[in-house]
Amino acid sequence: MMIQRPRRLRVTQSIRDMTSETRLSPSMLVYPVFVREGKNIIEDIPAMPGQKRYSPDTLPVILERAVKNRIGGVLLFGIPEHKDAEGSSAWREDGVIQTALRTAKKEFPSLTLIADVCLCEYTSHGHCGLLKGETVDNDSTLEILARTALSQAQAGADIVAPSDMMDGHTHAIREALDAEGMTDTLIMSYAVKYASAFYGPFREAAGSAPSFGDRKTYQMNPRNVREAVKEALLDVSEGSDIIIVKPGMPYLDVLKTVKNAVNVPVASYCVSGEYSMIKAACANGWLNEKNVAGESAICLARGGADIIITYYALELSEWIKEGSL
Image (cartoon, rainbow, N blue to C red; front, side):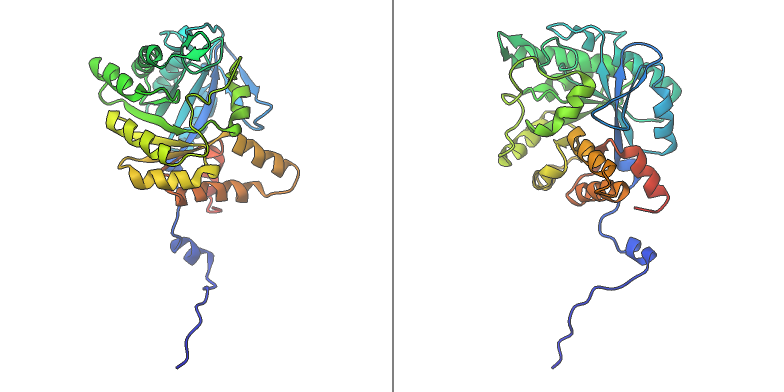
């Protein structure tokens, strides 16, 4: 009896696309944007070629492109002029993110607006919470995070995204939102955020590097996977509507594990270091940017990501529409 050897079909591009197990769409992409306090600002970020900081009045320039490309949403990070030990600019009614949200919601009402909730960009010491001596005080930080998230929701955020990694942050934010009738505001929690070496370019872009120590006491140990499931399930139980795993490609095993453990959408954040490495290699002619950026996004979707947060969101959406991904 002759046994047929399995073979890989040589098919046309259209058949290849039709039979692909994993697919990308613009609607699953979220674009991170840095918003700096001031006016008439559009400035390059040296560590992240192609990315820029915008002031609230120039932000519509990039948001218009996001709407045109029909991506899922934008994730806004604020860079204030004033920083202090309490991060008081984070919850000001006229703060940089609050101002940006009102501008964006007025001009682009259909665009999903996501606001990062953290104190590292706003504190003079650069840590994600309030300090007691040189230690981040988890419990006293919760009230400030809740106050910040509420101010963002009232300014127009459809989703608030706490990235601080304080225990109990989701519960505190959900209670604050619900008490003010903001029950439709979603929480997209950075439940699984590792103390990673891949965040360097972001910290330069946002001016958020800690002035002493590091964040290993409240961000996760890169050696741990079971802890990721514990953190994700805890945040879901407290009211998180979406869970983020961060970084992206180096943590595909974690992404798959978390995806299998929770019953809410899971987002993967392809972080600044991943983006800048691709940019640097492509600038040297070592890699093809479209192919590598596309493959990176596809592997995150294959690993279980329902949402991909990426600095390539605009380019990816254009490549998808033209049929080259």
